[in-house]
Length: 358
Image 1 (cartoon, rainbow, N blue to C red):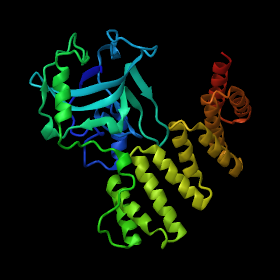
Image 2 (image 1 turned 30 degrees about the horizontal axis):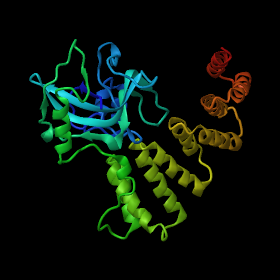
Image 3 (image 1 turned 90 degrees about the vertical axis):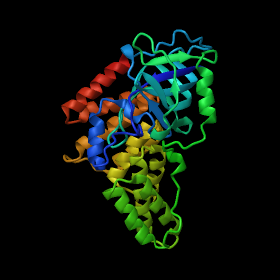
Image 4 (image 1 turned 90 degrees about the horizontal axis):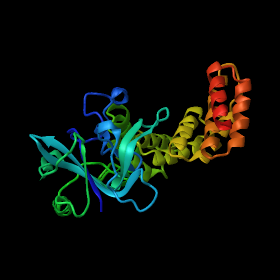
């Protein structure tokens, strides 16, 4: 097994900005402005962790790795060890197993209301990522970072490999990174059999305290009583659970619960727009097209909403492009270009059409 050690700055949780005084909206704004992706290295982001290290020239030089196929731009199934420096010593803060390490910085842009922009050198499933609590970051490794690089590459023959593996295999204490998939359906123990009180308390955790994991427990417990509550109340619980999951960056699961909401109310423009963004972000382009069509069918084009419908049509065309259905995309983009009242949208369609032709 190849392993890579990355040197990063110190953080308690590596799960975003650590400022408890900020509400969710201020925190979101501050995180949008942040230019330090390291603070998210152990955030569960839709079942994955995306690790970032500041590297010389932005490159992880994998030239000394013997690849077995043509995927030379990345290293697969690697052990990634994250360390921080203190008094010229390097202490392990956590590790990824079965990770992909990219030769160049990767970037994935978010959609409105869906997550954050991703910048990363490393990707691993969140279930394979392990973050030590501050009190247990005491294991020091003797590593020499050469040429001012913040990474070190080795394999099983490396002199520090056994030290690292022995520490990882013998560590039997707690980890503090949260794996959302294990929390999605957790309920409260000994909770009152009162779904109305549970929902009210969950709403306080969600909207007032931005404690989404705690709110999730209350809404999950409410669902134990779904046979005795009204359809409207059940819809509100599904919506609240979907919001918790979206704030927790569990987009696949948030999408499922937003669709449960629509099953009960048939149509809501804002929810459907959000479903479209979620679907595109998780690369379910056919589902995104389906919901674009629902909006385009239900909304009569007026002066007030014409730009909105043009934007929805552009999203539909974008999905066609992702699916490599270029003829459908060209036909739709040409129609938007000819009929939109927005010069910006018209120029966008023309630019995309030119790229397709090229």
